[in-house]
Image (cartoon, rainbow over all chains, first blue to last red; front, side):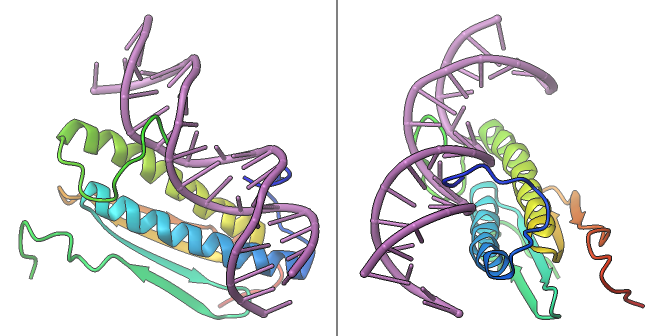
Length: 70
Length: 70
DNA sequence: ATGACTATTTATAATAC
DNA sequence: TGTATTATAAATAGTCA
């Protein structure tokens, strides 16, 4: 999905890799949020970056008002 | 991404919702795998369906051979 | 390093089988 | 129900501000 087709293997150029990480991480979480809302499911995502930084996403469950989980 | 633009809210038709769940769950996990490989990061995804079925994805870490975690 | 742009690729909604 | 096709929407790689 870009100007050129990208081979799915580690991007060797560091700045390109960081840019791709930022863009695709955002895209992944957006897709998870949409899936959660469209299909009424709960999703959690954990991303552990190469430098140990943690990114997380969790659908709040606010879209699951049809029953109560304890 | 389909024949028509889709509003991001719960799909009321059950069979449409199940089809969307199947397709989008697969797509989400594919994107996670690509992100993991391209950017050399570890990712875990947990999906808890409306009927209590659990789906999970975890990048194996096989793309993280640069160091050993204990 | 961000943030916008856009040409192009990728994902998928509707459809057909 | 499942699989394949295809028209269209969405994501994004490279680029530039």
